[in-house]
Length: 116
Length: 109
Image 1 (tube, each protein chain N blue to C red):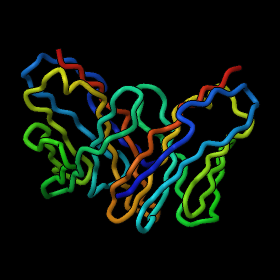
Image 2: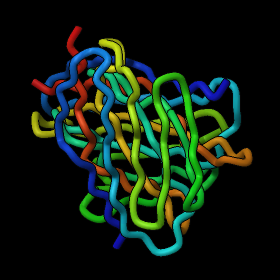
Image 3: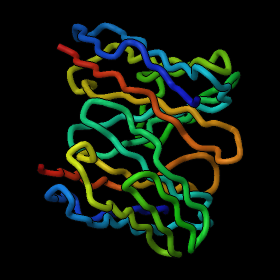
Image 4: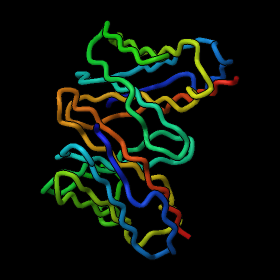
């Protein structure tokens, strides 16, 4: 159990276009999902907390107008990178909290974004 | 501010050579310390959650322990398939996790 999927796994786009990444909890409901960014050989950096039915909470320094987050249901959150630029190229990972006893966060497989 | 420091940054082991990874933390009101394993190009895979000092958890060749200031991940008789980056994270108030920088482990046959 506790499986989180992400789609797509890899995406290459041109500078100036927008890219949408989906995060789904497959076998549990998640009122809260999290979006992280990871640079090569570095640890995970929390970008925002996605709350079902309400606005996302962004970490300091993360542009909310650039990284749009929607959490429309208990199993789906989306991250849209708007007007992407080469510096947005990164590995984006989502996680979903299992609201059982342990309240553990389970991570998706990640999405590699390359902006040309 | 919550802080998590992992050491060493990298660890090279011979197959069968046991070792320990360290995770030191500073947090107000610990609500869980988490260990994850991450393979290159993949998302972190959950290993353990520890909640209170003295607690221990085991899974195959891995054993995690917790004190009031640090956690250790012991790898007993590692195999090449144990090669990965091991991440430690803490949760205080709310659901946010604060991650350490990770320890890259390479186990040579």
